[in-house]
Length: 78
Image (tube, rainbow, N blue to C red; front, side, top):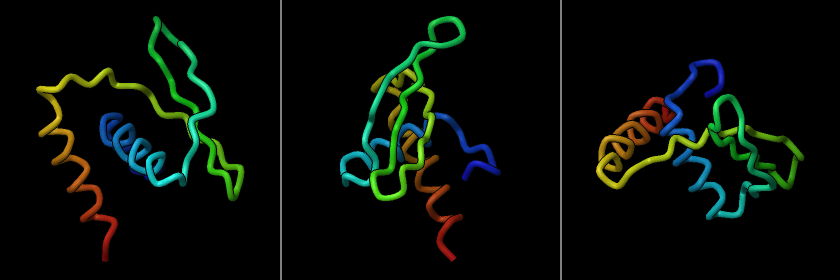
């Protein structure tokens, strides 16, 4: 996904899904560039670290973000 630069909203949702499945663990939150929050996740089995920008989603945006995630997952599935 990193090479295609997916939308930040979709990255955030996918990271949250993987956190719920205990694949990723949020280890830290940092503020960067004008107060934008970045969530730092670690994959326990490999030690890989992922930086996920927090898009500050609102409830009225959830449907469009859900559609973005579905489209990305469909592209990833052969």
